[in-house]
Length: 216
Image (cartoon, rainbow, N blue to C red; front, side, top):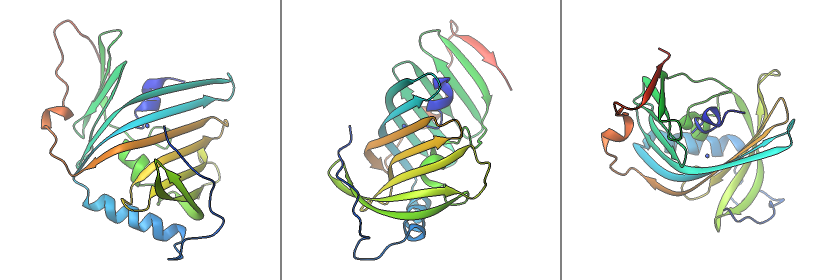
């Protein structure tokens, strides 16, 4: 599985067992999703650290990477890891390989197999039916746990579970299982909201020595 594709869906946690009882406020899945959506609509920018673990069922392999995610309104995002940088200004996306000193340029696209980071973190309500599971502790903080069931029987992601910070109303963990039984888990921490981000973060300056592959 190409990690360029994986991390473009731009993600050390501590937990306790899931509570068998809903919280006192009797939240349901739709309530939590609504709160997350409302929070997202007020969000101007975000910076966070992430960890992604991908379990490839067929090969019996596990791949892990860590990095930093920057989001800004208008489909602007930047993902930095030790090996690559992915940047978009909302129209064009640059994927830069540090090892190969190569940048691939393409139009920004979103799909179920390759969603945008903001879609992954916030916009799961349209394609999935949320079911409240209970509570867990993530990074020592209370989080609400939801199972998301796809509305389409032939959906590529056949099941998803999310953990939403009960105070921030932001998604801090996502676990997806696809039709091939591969498991993709994202953990997000050190979240900073509505901070000033340099506009230059969302464009990519190409050096003369860098190989350019333009797919537009």
